[in-house]
Length: 267
Ligand SMILES: Nc1ncnc2c1ncn2[C@@H]1O[C@H](COP(=O)(O)OP(=O)(O)O)[C@@H](O)[C@H]1O
Ligand SMILES: [Mg+2]
Image (cartoon, rainbow, N blue to C red; front, side, top):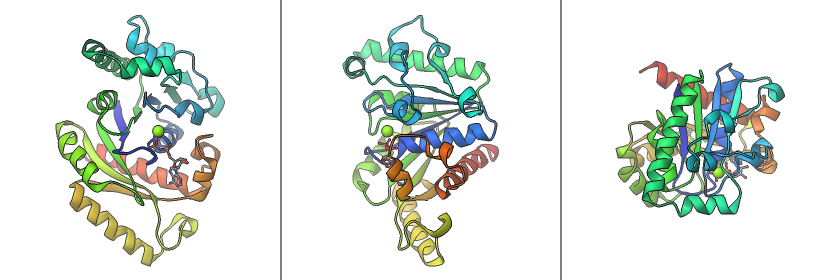
């Protein structure tokens, strides 16, 4: 099983959307895929997936008797793809339990995340996709620690280069994962690009920007996903590529999936 995490320095870059849509695309290709919400501070995968989950990953972190299978929600019947998800709680009390956790509880949490990973792997999952909290929250780091690939999502029109750089230098250098930048909500002259494909002129702009990011961050840019009004308009109501598999945004997620999988096969 391979694990792919989406992380960022700031909120609102598109981590949740990219996680859910990548998981959907991988499951549509026939891969058994688990989507995990480790964004305990701002969980919104339940809303995106249209689920009201009673048992969450928060419970798993505090209850030694719970297993991953007690909280995984299956979308197999609903969408006819091997997609499963485990959610973070939106109950304020449970959210603050995570924030207030002491050192002992944090160690227990990491152990239970590792146990969940092993259980998913033993249950035949091909991929696990993790949505994390922005910044250097402990629970995000737990997610990054178990990942094979970390995608640092940058919202191209608004990112803090010095903050992001210092997080990358200090945190990512400790990770074993392969780390890439994913540029999201990219705006060029023609926005969104016609049929999802940049014009030559815009391609030049985007490539120059990618080059600058690669030099600044010392990380490869995996892909640049345009800003699509339809995606923004839909907000957090549903997984976009499930509803619109042929939309250019969904095609961009397919490119992202292919590049990540190509990276695995090149190892
Ligand atoms: N490529 C995109 N084009 C347009 N809007 C996007 C795109 N990606 C994400 N969004 C919008 O950006 C907002 C933030 O996305 P979200 O996934 O919730 O970010 P995060 O999880 O990093 O906080 C959402 O309203 C979403 O609809
Ligand atoms: Mg989010």
